[in-house]
Length: 229
Image (tube, rainbow, N blue to C red; front, top):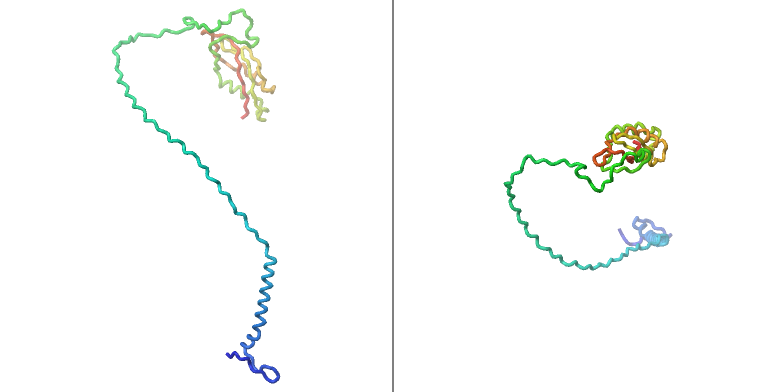
């Protein structure tokens, strides 16, 4: 391929033009067109590109705090070994097999700090709650029966509604452990529950209270609770 410019005719026409000649002739226009396009493209990018800002990644370093080392603790020496106890020796004393312990009663050992029993003719104790001297409290004997009676007496409407309560009752228990009188000491706030508690009062059976080994009538206070399932 020759680098010489092809000869022209007298009219200025090129009688024969190769592909290399055409490329050389168009090289200048392609080069300057590319340069111009690149300049405009870079200018557009720089103009429309968003402004960027650097994120703040600064940090603070915490200063180390110097603490004082606690003083060294001196470990005390272990305690001395405890001496083994001496071997027990069986005594030769003879104990009488006929030894009996005498029965202890209030008549033989009268305490000095107990009040005397209530004497007859001092008024009707069962009318109003009052304290009666005793050293043994009444003991309920039929807890299971009282529980069943409590379930039967619980008003169904209140039970279905999830409403319960507690009634504090006063019971007068005679010398035989029977309930002779009763009254509401503290209401539950619902008349139906108070009536239900009073309806089972006669169901209670007690071992009577005692004072100096003698059964005595007493007033006691018992809470009756109605709890929905």
